Image 1 (cartoon, rainbow, N blue to C red):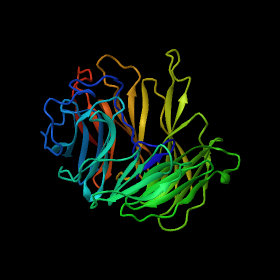
Image 2: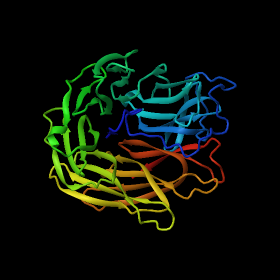
Image 3: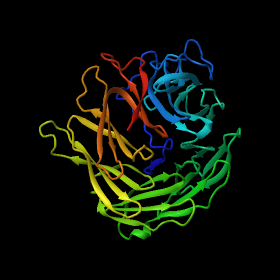
Image 4: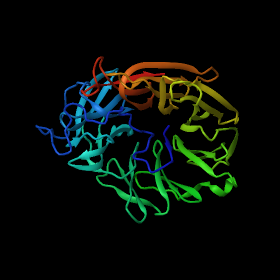
Length: 442
């Protein structure tokens, strides 16, 4: 399932943020904004099956019965994608050329059904800041020429939907099926609303956040568009002003979690077929100082994950620590439970978080753990924490230890779930190319 936090216009849909370490200088061999690689590499060129040539940022997705990873190969000035089966590379392709490293660069990989994956680069290319998408087939062949896209994009089974924002006037919503060669406008979002996308399995939901309400409209890449409907109305909550809201999908049904300034939590769903459900107001609350970090659901459960600052957990060291909690709501009975997932830890900082609702045996909550005591040549990421929720059983804790400069969620398929990590070798300082490796769970 895919989830989006609606705090601002996102760079791409699918929680994603980039975990690119703490360095603010380019990796060894990185091309600068004013220099190109000595030997230009043509797009679509097959590359050596070497997973140890990458620098942050990286992206990953489970697609077509393999793990597809992508990242910057700084020495060549390319974004390279690689398919791995059982952890071993089976193909590698340079999907985008003429790119250079920057601290805010991002790579995202989105599964696109039988079409393969969409690789999205946000960063420097040809001396300009761009957001560019390339489609890659399951065997690593390029399915499309690089295409500039807007501030947000969703790759789904049948095609692509993206936003074309402008300095003034409404935001255009463009779509193209995978068989098409160009996009076409399917919808617009008024200038007085903040637009965002939420990715379903086949549908993409276009949200418009206004002063008093939020609207949602479903778009199919082939061009079918539903009428915008009001999903959240401030007047329905009286004087309890909104603190935040989060959206997620269950297949092609849209779900919302709203947190009021009082800490009150309310849930509702907009089914693909049928009428919107009434708001379900929970008994549990989320205190004002706590931060919601992930929301998602499956056929049985809605999960809301949040962190709590423990100001007195680390006396004498001048820092605070965060505990991790979750609200678990049974979608059928409405039963609620508050779960303590992890105590405050003075040695580690948690995040980013994601929820794997398609995990075999029940959903799983995962998060990256960063060390708060960074030693010389030590990688900032020391592990990934996992909490599984088997039906009718206790929460199962697990931790995967690693030394990494970046970790990204790769999603789930019938085989299970995975994430990818940019692993730092022992005694390295993080300024050399590193290997991207997939890790399966639960």
